[in-house]
Image (cartoon, rainbow, N blue to C red):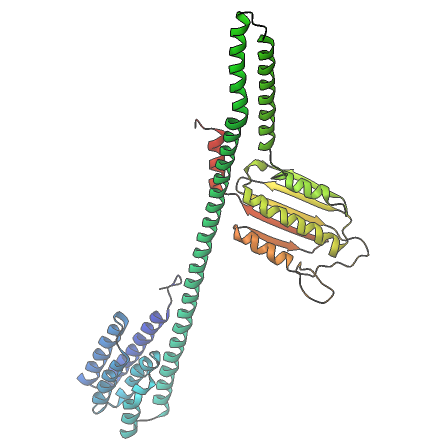
Length: 388
C-alpha cells in the first residue's frame, strides 16, 4: 500500500465486497433458498483468494460457471456476472467473458439493469487496470531516478575522494622534493663546512699558516649552504596565487569597471576543488556583466559558513542600456542563440554537489553555492592539531 493507504488492489477489494454485499441483499430480498447463498459464498471465497493470492485470469471461468449453474434456478444470478466481468477487465483479458455473453444470450436474461450492472463492472475493472499500470510506471520511474541519483552521489564521492588522494600525493611528492634538495645540496655544503671547520681548528692549534685558508673555505661553504636553503624555501612558495588570492587577483586584473570584493568567514576551510570552481564562476560572471549588461560596477561577495561557501556576483544595468540577459537569466546573443558558458559552469558546479542560480531582476545576479567537504576539514584540523 502507498502512503495514503489507497491502491488499485485496495479499490478492487472494496469493489468486490460491494458487489457481494449487493448480491447478498438481492438474495435476502428474493428468498431464493440455498442456491443464492451457495453462489454468494462461492464468489466470496474466490474474491478473497484473488485479494490474497495472484490467481491467473482464467479462474474467472469458475465464477462464470457458478453463475450459469445458479442462473438455471435463480434468475437474479445474472447480476452476479458483474464480478467475473470486473475481474476479467481488471486483468485486461476480455476474451474470458465469452461464456458470460453466450449464457446471457441463450437464457434471454438481457435487460437494461443487467446491461448497466455489467457495463459498470467492466468500466471499473478497466479503470483500475489503467490506474495500476500508471502507478507501476511511476514507481519504475521513481526507482530509476533513485538509482541514477545514487550513482551520481557515488560518483561525486569518488571524485572528491580522488581529489583528496591527488592532493595527498602532491603534498607527499613536494615533501620528497624538499627533502632531496636539502640533502643533496644544502646538506652537502653544511657537512663540508663542518669538516672544514674541524680541519681549521686542528691546524690553528698547531699554528699552521694554512689555517686562514681553511677558515675562508668553511665560511664560503656556510654561505653557499645558506643560499641553497633560501632557494629551497623560496621554491616551496606556490608559483601563482591560490585560494582567496585567486579571486582577488581576478578582481584586480578586471579593468572594465570597478569591482568590489567582500569576504566573510574563514576561507581556510574551503577545499582546493571548490576554489577551482569558484574562480571560473567569477570570471564568467565578470565577463558577461560587461559584455551583455553594460554594468557600471560589480559587487562580489564570498560567504563561508560551517557547511557551505557562497559566491554572489551582482551588477546593476547602466541607465539607458539594453540588458543582454533574458527573464530567465540567460545570455541573449544577436543571432538568437544561447551562450554555453553558464551551462558548462552549471555542470561543473553540480559535479561537486553545488548549485548555480541566476536572477535578472534589477540587473543580473549569479549565485554559486558549494558544500564544504567535511573530510577535508577533518584532515585539516588533524594537521593543525596533531596531538588531538
